[in-house]
Image (cartoon, rainbow over all chains, first blue to last red; front, side, top):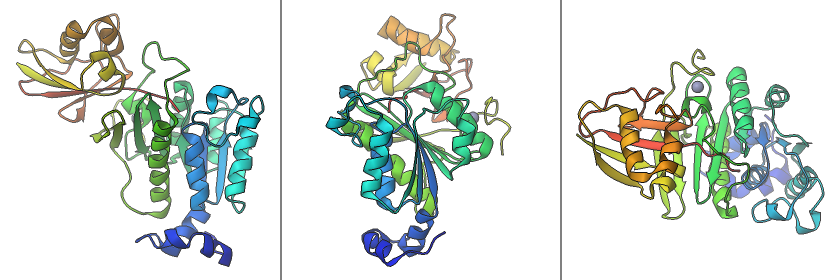
Length: 248
Length: 92
Ligand SMILES: [Zn+2]
């Protein structure tokens, strides 16, 4: 946990006024590292909020080149960057916002092959991947390495966020053991709906790191922006879960 | 017996409703209840919640009175139970 410099005290002054946060909370954030798996419409605003809040180190996993259809939600991209690697724009924009933060841009998506290494590098993981295979790989690795995992996902006008604390809360496979039938890689999305899930997930991470408040542990927050309904749904571990069934 | 259903995510879209009450024969289990709901809402709803053998899909989170139910759908229901159905989403 690093002591704050005078510059950092000036930058983070207003958030250190938050009751229960203070300079101690800021120092915990400075000493923390996080992995953001996919940095698009959800991971982008999430990484931006963690950077703005002063997290010490971010590892970002995101493959591919920018497409015009990314620009309705991927706010770390720029219109002039179409056709170029997304990860370069992500790292550049995050460093512009917070030059004190360490950012490792990994131009790959999370897979069975790299999940262990990526999760091993950080204190906390944010899962924002559009493919279930990536999410299930990440979940397995976080349970194995006992790292907290904030699961954020959206579809159309709705979102779901829950915080997985291995050994304590249900894991992703306790909730869902496979993708829905006919799930497609492309999904309907308005940027504001994914950014909403992102900000909820960012607060979950900030709370876990600083000890502020009470995380969505054993609860899944569901929201529907069509009716502006927000609802917490209790979720429990499955003793027969193939991933976390025996973990404590 | 009367069972209350609450729908979220894609299930809500497939049902075209957020909640409803369905009258089911006494002794019905979860899979029977979802088949009963599917009879109202058609093949897209059925495909989302049940597999071709009528077993509750593992892509569904099913709660009975707020408690996650064991997979498969064999859990027996009782008058007044509330069944919550949520489908996995992964959009980012
Ligand atoms: Zn589990």
